[in-house]
Image 1: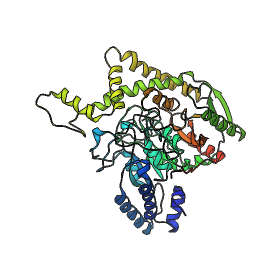
Image 2 (image 1 turned 90 degrees about the vertical axis):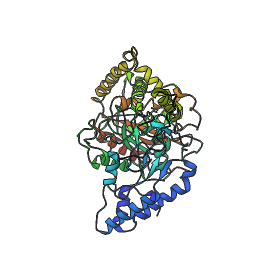
Image 3 (image 1 turned 30 degrees about the vertical axis):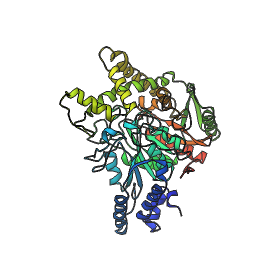
Length: 487
Ligand code: GLN
């Protein structure tokens, strides 16, 4: 039996029957990391011996009669912008290369309290800015379906690690698509909760008004389990809410009572025809299964991309001001000839990569006197208009289905020199962040021998509807638990 092919509930059964120990499972995953990760580059750090030690503790708890539930004995990987006390948390930036987290993120605390075993920290675009993980200051991550290609981004390491069976599940963060787009490129499930659902305490901020933490898994059920574990209010993050989290029964309901909306304006230039074909196929499959599918129009949804990049750059310029060369991470010796501004400029120029510098510059401009009204505030106004447009649409449908990304995984280097084309990768994912909606990406088919992702979005705080639709689609399509060739 290959333990890596078991989902969480099957693992738990094997723990109860004594067929498997947590240590055997954790060792099996660590073995894959040892064999594969030099080539894939998904991990920045692996906690081999700590993971084994933790597994032994959990095995002792099993011997003491504990019944596994939640994430007991489940190997997880963490995007390297999530703090884990006493370990390096770099956000893949040279400016935080030696930063050791003094505390643990709430979402990670919840994983640990539920019995998860952290295998390591995964690669990402620097400060989560990017769509290919090529903006990491440390290494390139390869797509396990084709190692000439990117895994997507910014949570590319987490997506690649799950797709290549280096871990069972992983956490990422999604500000404009950074969980869903890499999930779609790597053939796994990626879920972004509603803003406010999961505490951001201990997540290194990109854009605080949009960032959310969420799971990667190889099937909807496992993704739901991780989501249900990390969700909930947290006194350390006042934007979290107490809305009900729902139970796993929602996964069993099929498409019953779900009306699915399709955006007819979701056509863009540069959309890969075979991705569009897969989406049409998926819609046909739903209709043939008796699902009520209706066309909708939300013309302003496509403005989300522009709104997103205005808000993100503005918040980046403000959030990243804290990396001044004194308080966090990278520092240098003061030169006698320097004042504070010279000093901080020198350290920041050395510590930040090109994309980060570009966004700080853009955001400083969009927030500057005279331009803040024209750019930043206008973006905020449009954000609320787009939010209302979606809220209105959800009066008529329960979920909205469409593509996750306009293309399949592209080649390493293909878009790296062209930031605007890279930004276009987010065209279908940004609306959920801008309108505060939960959204999932799941594999729906293949094009060019690479996985294609489809996305379900739901009304704010109706994660149940999104998971219900995803589980129902997974069932009728039979596309689940894919194994990438490089796995
Ligand atoms: N691709 C988007 C960006 O570069 C998404 C980032 C994210 O969601 N963290 O900003």
